[in-house]
Length: 444
Length: 80
Image (cartoon, rainbow over all chains, first blue to last red; front, side, top):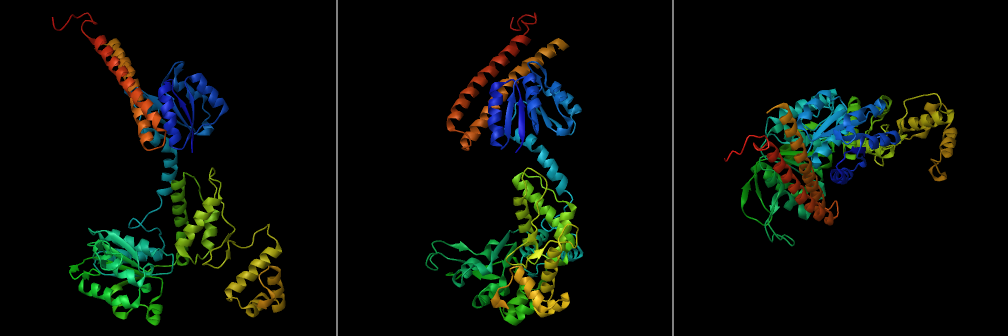
């Protein structure tokens, strides 16, 4: 929200302009003369001044002398003379803009947004989105871009493997973007449908095919014609539905549920799973014949801990997005970005995005500083302290506690081994854990 | 057209642009009313102001014609 001073002697114009400026979410005060405007400036500070060029007691330009340079107030001169535009344009500094009457809502919106746009432009230009989607310049990501580039030139089906939260759907969209195909990108989650409904989701259904099928429905294969179909959590698809999928992949035709007509389909299928290849083979969640149809070109997406150098870029991107959505102007401090890089992010990019969002909510919306939570706590990740090591100002007890937990994590909770590593008796270790409130009598 | 005439023309255009600006702003207000952002009755008032603004603009244009007519400049009527 900006605080705006509107200086114009046309009462009817100022009345409506105030309504519009307030509708745009800003606070506005008015003055009809230079004297009134000067009085406001002596009492209040403004982010933006909308200033009529011709006022009853002189030119609006005289007000510039009353502005405090350190306030960095933006000024938009309003004029009814197009000829004056040229003169103003010549004297326009970085903080001076102009509007020529008649003025529309969009004009006001764009001049008032100028300041925020400048900030977000400055901070977003450095981040490249590969294939319009992916962020990261690390070696593992460069390798990924190479694979996406290669496979996008073919029609091969792709299987994306990677831990939860690495961005499999984003990679699927990147493949679609790079493919330069005519059709659309359609995404569906195979784990989200019951055995009864997944056939209808994938292949569509005819009217009256089952109870509740009140009309004909196109399946995702048809929707993605000449495009890309993303099947997320493919390994969660019921095993007895898999032969139907295999038939579509082999014959490239679908038959809607309750229908008889075979319809040709043509789309690239990008599937994804968070299970490893070994797990897929051992757990038999995916039929072998389906696997070879889907994973013509398997791509493993690296976890965030293997590309830590991308964490600052991603954190910048997420905070820029939040700034844009909420009109805030948060900025990372270099030391904060270093701290984020010390954590392993077991929940990957999704966890990082969630953490940045949480930090932004905790921070003062009027300021630029981001308040970083002391610990990263996710129910899906082990608690880890954001400490970069020993620093003056911490107590011996705090450092000892941190060392004990780090050692326990390293030895996967084995207290005897941890005690040995720490050079203390097992009894002492138990006493410490008791004191931290982390043990009860049952666990001993 | 000499400099004096051009200055008068500029002033007349400026005067005509003032009601046009009001009309534009009142139209924006009506859009807001239709979007439900401001009360509907404000739209009715805005419409009246647009009508008044159009008349003002018309008057300004008539003045402009009068100012630059040959009679006003002592050049006689073009019909005669």
